[in-house]
Length: 166
Image (cartoon, rainbow, N blue to C red; front, top):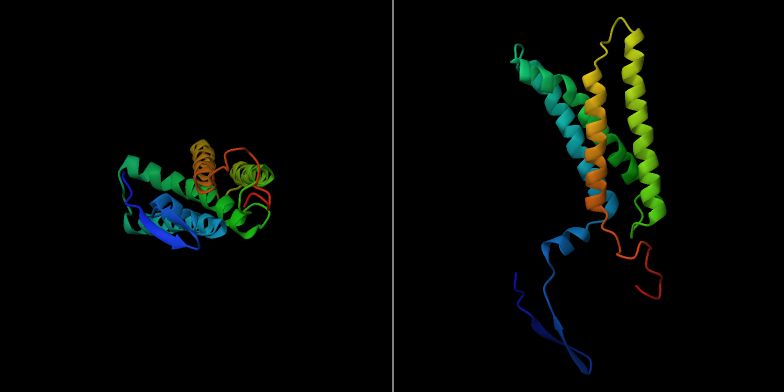
């Protein structure tokens, strides 16, 4: 895509300034906001699933399967992103290698917790254990990781810029 440049006079030197791209505009939104919006989309998916369960009392087998595993997928997608948006050390800008490691630990914590809850259901008369729910949890966690990596572009050299570089 070609950018039309405009000449801007700033002091004694003329500079050519190009318009920002859409990706650059998106990155102007603070990281905690990007993460919480993605997490809220997962929560909206969870709400839509609960609505669909009530709206379609006798779905086909494929739809019933999707409605059965979708809460696990949505929870494992939403939980780490929403929690990361609330933790300043994880949602630091620019993202540091330490922040990414902390997100991975948070992702592991939520994934193990959701899988453990599924395993607790083997001993419960009220809840039903389903191995597909564990698979949906792991897949949702993988999607959360992909969203986090997209939302936190690397600085290129693996470290945050110093105050002199910024």
